[in-house]
Length: 396
Image (cartoon, rainbow, N blue to C red; front, side, top):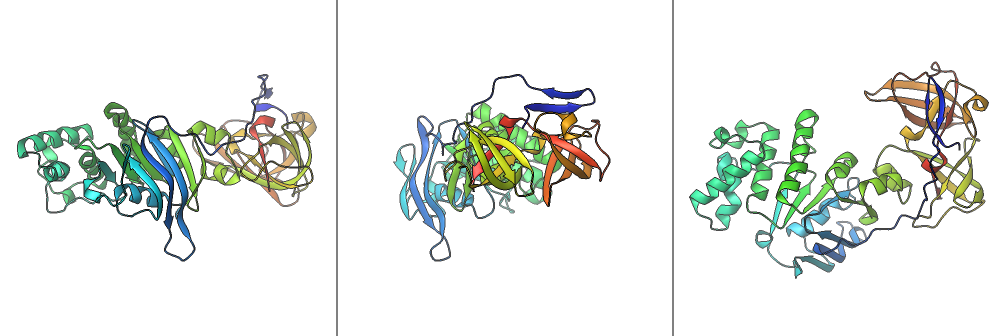
């Protein structure tokens, strides 16, 4: 479609920049100087013949933060539990600092762990909870209390709360105590099993911000399992997208968002439209598609794990909602390769309007546009367009 950037009350604006090349998205490259390494690790599921974790390879460098992103049952928590020592691999090797972790007791592993619940000891004070791992390592009382109090302050827990019991604190503050306890002994790796899932709003944002800040200040190495793409992108150097116990794609947050390896990765990494159709023709990387709703569109061909789209074959066109322009004009007035649509719904979502549009016969698409732009009335005809290089076309 047209290389359209946005539609405003002043008209249609096009980007004159050179086309961006679309390269096949690889499963990822090993991080240099790995501190934590998975080598063809397997773990069977509870059901016969089901793999909780298929051959899994991942390297995490010292000081790096890697997120495991995926839906429930993808294998994220299995990875965390293997490193923590709560599970043992059925095959493959798991190394920390070059040493095998297999059969090493969980309490001997140089890790810190925070899960979705604070799991604090209810009969111990906040300070004693934070100092627990130091006490277990034989650190004297005065030193461990000093170190615990300092770590609690880093996490925003005032000294005056040290003598209280966890039940006297809010959930957000209990989670901060859990983070302090996990890090007070300076572990080699911090494991996070979706620790922010029970929080929301300002408390969640504040704790996420402190996690990002302290990760940098303390030079933490982090392995973070989460279902939230926003958290994975905002707190990580690299993200491994898991589905069905396998890594579908590994890369930087921007690479995953801009160039997902397949439609599943696209959906797991943010809002997207997935429009089925058939390939009419290929001209280099440009792919001409006839959508099942009857309209024709253009996108960039991507060779995913199953190969690239082929002329005459089935395909899926993927486009992010914010990359779709909508105008109260005819396709001819809007510009090259614009297609007709009908505005079905418009909802205010703060920094954008969420528009739902009907396409052709039975097709539907969602667009995100800035508030204040001129839009057609609900139920009336409109036109849509997108930058050719923003749409991806995958086989199948």
